[in-house]
Image (cartoon, rainbow, N blue to C red; front, side):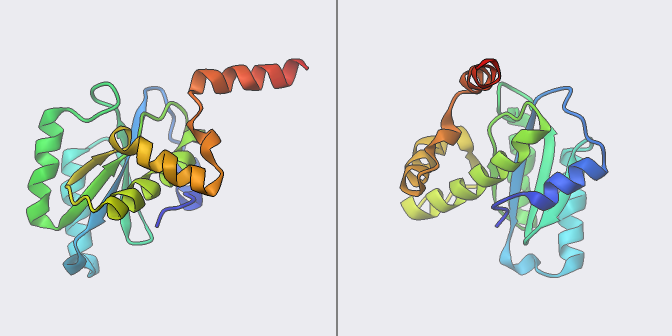
Length: 168
């Protein structure tokens, strides 16, 4: 689910979304009883009330929300409370990416979110809100298994690596 984020990339380009401030990507897993389109539309409206300025789309049965970061890579307590109220309205869980600085990082955030969901299932976690930062070590272990652990390089080191590549 949401493994590569290609559709999201296309949608971001179509809507000319700009990253003037850091953002977070949220993946909302609707409860199984919300499979009908009217119920999903109602949930989307409720999410729009929580995030009025956010970009919301659906991909592979999940709702994705691209919103501005609120408090150091997290949502503020008030927003978390509003989201927890949505459990009664049909949200099974929400996974929140790490801070996204530029549009190119959205695809990585998609991948990380799908891996958090996989890691949470693997360790038997059943929570409502999952932050990538809290599951990073589990995701890293899953990535080492796949040989793609280099995604966990700090962004500052990535900039230096790219600079060295251009100067050689």
